[in-house]
Amino acid sequence: MNRTTLSLIAGVAALAAVTGFATLDAPDTSGADTAKAAARLPVERTGLVCPAPSTSDLAETAYTSFTPVTKGAAAKGTAHLTAATEESTDATGKTDGKAGKTDGKDGKTDDKTGKSKEKGGKTAAKPVLAPKAPGTPATGTTSGGTTPAYLGTAEGAYAPGWTLQETTEVAAGTGRGLLGVNCTAPDTEFWFPGASTAADRTDYVHLTNPDDSAAVVDIELYGPDGALQTTVGEGITVPPHASDPILLSTLTAEKQDAVTVHVNVRSGRVGAAVQALDDKLGGDWLAPAGDPAGSLVIPGIPKDAVSVRLVAFAPGNADADLKVQLASSTGLITPAGHETLHVKGKMSASVDLGDVTRGEAGSLVLTPTDDAVPVVAAVRVVRGKGDDQESAFIPATADVGTRASVADNRAKAATLSLTAPTGTAQVKVTSSAGSEGGATASQTYTLKPGTTQDVVPPAPQGLKGTYAITVEHVSGAPVYAARTLLSTDKDTPGFTIQTLPDDRGTVSVPEADENLDVLQR
Image 1 (spheres, rainbow, N blue to C red):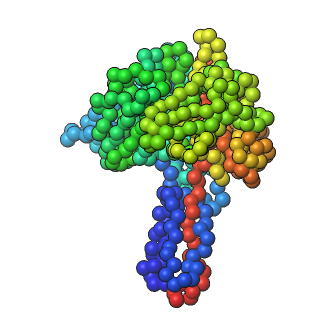
Image 2: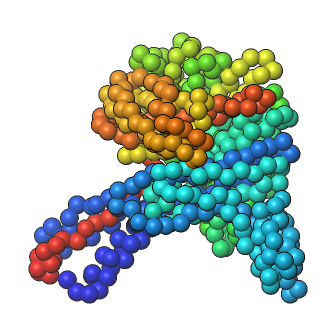
Image 3: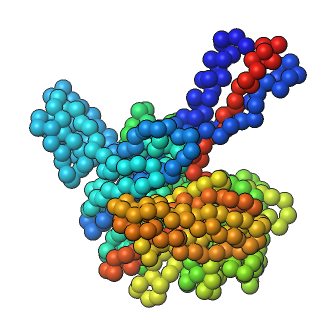
């Protein structure tokens, strides 16, 4: 093998370890097996973005960072979460940006904006939190309605499986309650079934650009009758290191209660999430749905849900017919009167399933009745009674894969929902050390085919602060998971639900054959 070939393989391995995108299989031109089976290596760099949490002066927001301990990861590393700002500096050194102003003189920090003031007019973002070590969560807090979006980067030991949770408590007003979202990796396409432009909803799609160049984004809206007429949804420019919350009702005059939002990035990358605020049912984040697929799983519907509304969308021209089933605590059942759902191509379909779980743990399983047609889906869940009702959203998601984690779990406030729709499976659940002290605790669970099991995560010994939950697939069929978090503030009743897809902490990288004589033939 010549030096050029060796350099190529080394370069590909390094790129894959950093990006986590793909595996390279080199062509075999000699008929010999020229490479070993691909190895799984820890990623070396991860980027996440967190949307601006709230415009309410009553908002209290916590950010929690967690990296599970990963075998083979780098010994050292860094992770930080800093404000996303759009700034321009003139010749005098004065900086005028959305996140605040600096005087370029005293090197002090503006506590309201989280910006550090340095000499010479240069502005450095002040990290909102500083992770301690892999295996231990780190937290940071902000308050009020001026908190910006945040950009996160983790490298080395902190990169594999890095997760960030943004949790906001709003005591009163539109969107009151507990709002939670996993900060997302930047991408070029997102689907959000379950948004709304109705009069009682105030929905924003937050676009955050982590890169050094501007991103250009198109936003498409689809209702029950197809595409909604929009006036300013095309060619939206998101400046570098900036975030733009866009009110959906400003994009169209049509009032629709079941809307699918499609975010398509023409140039660059963004992170995207929809903040859904309801006048009566509180608010929460609608996270991006999993990729369009013929079969979908929506895990973790609370057993005390009083209302479950399913919204599905078929991105292509073909119609989809879906069998609707509930993976209950005892097995798969079909909701009476809602056996199937017909989804027309490029039209949003919705169905109210009522209190479908009826006091038992449950997850929705959607499968094709005939030919598989890719769809996306999500549910809105309502809990509570009267004026104390609150809502949350659960998108269809990928399975936990090898491993998945969720941060910001609080004592006696978190429930983990596990489902194995297609067969028996076993998973190991580990509760991390607390952010302020404590020791890890683990427990293994066996799931029967077609069932959902709600479990209280094993309590960390001597827990102080918040902790993270990691789910590892041990054996059997694919497992899907979601975490429900309840508000611990008696004056702010509410809940939020986050799914646990694979953390993509490792990537397949081909190994060169140790016998170079064979490769040189």
